[in-house]
Length: 171
Image (cartoon, rainbow, N blue to C red; front, side, top):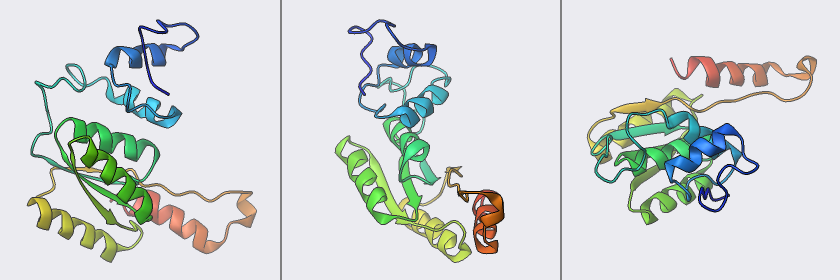
């Protein structure tokens, strides 16, 4: 869903889409989740993707839950701002695809499959980031989990995973 303010100056769009059009980031907003993430980040001082302003140049940003949705959109935005992004999620395929997309756009991305519910996996993630880039400057705890269906059908393991991923892991 490319944003093109010239082709559609506000016709049939909500206020959020109109503001996104002003950001001039047509290739990043590929779905509703990405548009929402970009809109939430548009409050940064100065315009996004101003080639003269790369606020995260030579910074390392680790993003959990990076394989899709807000995590993937944030990774693209940080990379566009000059960050070296370390992409973490359980599924390798989504991470590799995103890393390749960022690299094709001229960014630097490292995909590290990680389960934030497993402390050893998180340690490996941070060690790999430090090995590749020397330090971690920003950590975006974006990974999340939920259990679906009626609460009386949740197993103890499902509830424990939700609490671990959403509460314990970020701490």
